[in-house]
Amino acid sequence: MKKSLYYTVPGARRLSNYIWGTILTIGGLGFLLTGLSCYLNYAILPFINIQTIQFFPQGLVMSFYGILGLSLSIYIWLIILWDLGQGYNEFNLETGEIQIFRWGFPGKNRRINLKYLISEVQSIRVEIKEGINPRRVIYLKLRGNREIPLTRAGQPISIQELENQAAELARVLQVSLEGI
Image 1 (cartoon, one colour):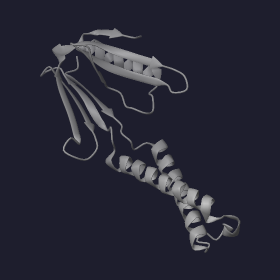
Image 2: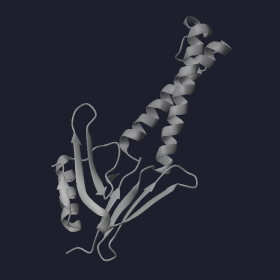
Image 3: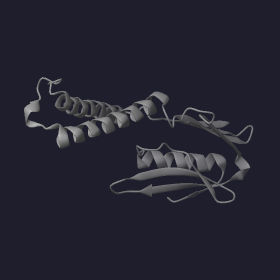
Image 4: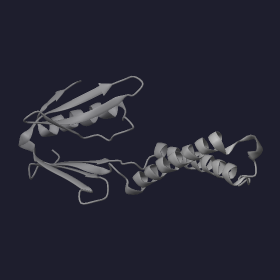
């Protein structure tokens, strides 16, 4: 029998975040430069006809959208840089401890490191919700009705992978499996 289980949890460095960061950067820059071109009455972007756009209200609104888009893109690029949510789950049967580690926002609480005893685990709960915003999560259910999510946020994992991981955890920790 295994003496420990170790699962890595991917963070914000995924393809969809890179795509959204790029789209927001290009779009925000385009809107901002168009608004500035209208204000300065000089075509910063050569393919835009600024004679058809007045600064007030169109250019002003485009500048606002540009600043908003660039702000959101900076936020996404920082999340990617910091790799928020990345970490691991370790279940050590020799010491009887569970360690859940994640990277958070910079500051004094950047390192999120939770430790629990295996004896505190009541069960493993699986939540599967399909639809427009699918949700597939494995929860570590502790005594006192505390639930700690073990899977990554954002992209849901496949149902087969979720079931296999949850069943393996329940078998190794010798607790019940709920929700399947």
